[in-house]
Image (tube, rainbow, N blue to C red; front, side, top):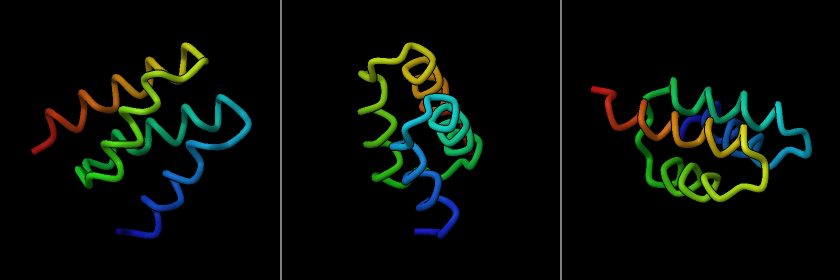
Length: 67
């Protein structure tokens, strides 16, 4: 796995929700369909913070549509 993707995955666990949202958006825009990315995004759809859940769902949609 790419170092950038690994870092984005780590940032999805940050204490600041906006950092997590930005990392999730980066994962969605990356187009990387690695199972670890998909598993983490799926888990984040159950997050306690609404913006994180929405970002995770959108990122999964982007990955689904990516070529």
